[in-house]
Length: 396
Image (cartoon, rainbow, N blue to C red):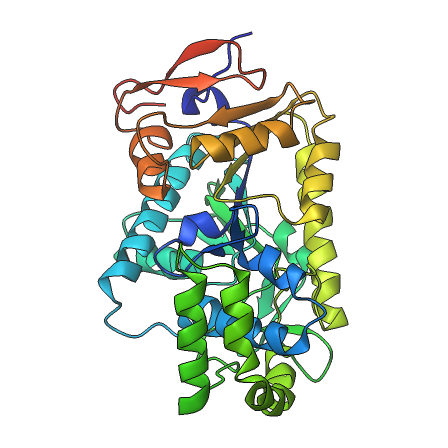
């Protein structure tokens, strides 16, 4: 059976996207490390934290490093933004621009897409605001919040639409809308006194500073974690020297860390009930969207390490009118995804045999209506190789 990823064929479907850490590479680090286990396999932060889950000192050190490297850089955005971060925002802007062009081709009452992301950062919000400030196109971003000076979150708010009725009510024009759902929480979320989730796009409430001794410890451990020649034995030997200092700091670090409304990458669990409820509400929303007729789910930079999301997507694939396109960064990633979804004929894999398929290449050659392109896409069986044609002439 011929399989195609062609915007001309899917533009009028119920469009859903699932973005993971791979979309924000450059803005924040990924969880991939260089340190190896006894079998020579590279660890990720997830596998390493699971390995040391009964070692309180090592767990504290790892999460301190995780906070410093993967969370804190996303808590505030200096102006002007560093070039490495600005290039990431540029790709998000290109992605959103193409999506708006696609939505404008949908029937007037549709023009809506859902972006589910497991990233804590606010890259999508920054990119959307910059596009809105440029005033080159009209669209709305629904982050699930309502209010004026204080905005609170609930998934029922994703049902709201903005309609431009004109000065004399002579026409109804639905604006293209992107629903933005942070499944693993966001650095912009906070729990208020009423037990609701409040959105804060101002200065972060979650800044935690490290002293000189702690910075030295974290730097040494980081050097080990990103050294291809190091093993867990090197990490164990290093941490023993600093156990007493880490024990003292743990009593301050963990209460501050646990205030953050994010899913930990080891337990996939929030520390606050209100955030966990939002997590499951967002998963129900994802499930509902994937059950709708003629639905499409495009995943990028997502490893499916969250077992709840993996299970939900696998159940949803029983919907015969749902098609999922998995964008694979490398051949090894494609092999991994083929193992996860080997039983589902409505899963297609997008990969590049020439180079790593990062967000820029995805925008350049795949998710674009400007450049005609032929490329190869293999079915989930891995047997048939077909030619995939994108839009010719930049017209949907």
